[in-house]
Amino acid sequence: MAKRSERPGRGGPSLPTALIHHPYQPPAGFGAPQPGVHKASTVLFANTAAMRARTWKEKVGYTYGLHGTPTTFTLEERIATLEGGAHTLLVPSGLAAIALVDLALLRAGDEVAIPDNAYNPSKELARHELAHWGIGHRFYDPMDPASLRAAMNPATRLVWLEAAGSVTMEFPDLRALVGVARERRVRVALDNTWGAGIAFRPFEIGIDISMHALTKFPSGGGDVLMGSVTTRDEPLHLDLKMTHMRMGWGVAANDAETVLRSLPSLPLRYAAQDAAGRALAQWWAARPEIAQVLHPAHPSSPGHAHWCGLCSAAAGLFSVVFDGRYTAAQVDAFVDALQLFRIGYSWAGPMSLAVPYDVMAMRPKSGYRGPLVRFSVGLEAVEDLIADCEQALGALPRLTTSR
Ligand SMILES: Cc1ncc(COP(=O)(O)O)c(C=O)c1O
Image (tube, rainbow, N blue to C red):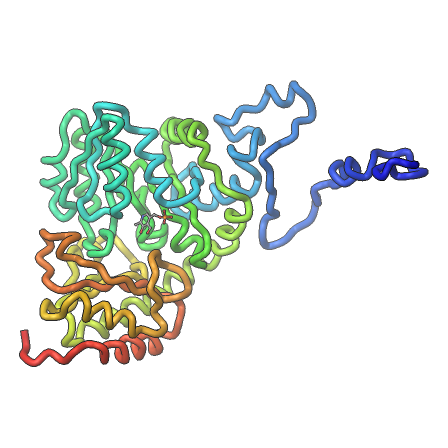
């Protein structure tokens, strides 16, 4: 009996082999708005000499899927363009991007300075893994450059910046903070997720590294996790790249393709979410139920003057602090009553989101007395979002006396 895999009468390879070694040629001369998707763990070499000639330290050809494919290299170039940098590395999440910077630049005995209103998992990484490895950390008040100066000492090797601050949305004087780090010649990394390469040009304020949770605006769909680390300085990029390689933090081509597809609409989405976020923040500012709007473009928000001095736009992300007479349970009932704003973490996707926070426990020094709700404004019509907030406020009891 003829073997099942034989291709009778053709004299070619067997069927399983023929299905793998298909005479496929990349479509030279084929043009399309989006780049092709190239998926690989294994990258093939024409011969051993070609294999030995390749190195993954520089982007000279391809070596192994983990270290880059045409799809991930294309996205890296686009993110470098977005940030105004020269070199970008992609990692599987924004938090992994923070970890990459910490792991690449810090050794046992070093210290890192982190804003006390930073994205909390970054602080947790310092409190746990970095501490276990003998790396110290100090939290500073980003609204007071003297606090950063006081937090630095000869062991400080890295200063993190974040603008706006996580949840409480303070906008620091980034130039002044960079100046303090420069006094001691310490490297500065910025979490640029909020600015997204749109609100301001991160490298123009003198930072060394721009870290970006691509999960937010660049993905734009609420469906992809990815992070990036961008630099202008090539030796610094190569240091980061070696750690990236040793940690095995590659990203999947399909995820990279999704972000590539969303990138062209990023400026439009950012502008739309900014406009809706400001309109909504303005509406909230006139509501008697709240004590404060926290939105960098709103005059009452901490650091508004710094935002005015640096930025041309703002992300559609803001918080409101409720009157201190409302309990957390009452504000939870308001959040539960929202229909269009859904309850969920993250931001910058098409669907508006709301999350209540216990700001008094989270930022005791802030002096805020009431529960806080953070809103991520999506791409719905702003009048519908305002109507949604208005109807959900019906879940709150009326306050009898004024503040
Ligand atoms: C400011 C900021 N940085 C980093 C991250 C982490 O991004 P990811 O969720 O992709 O790990 C987040 C996520 O919420 C964030 O808000």
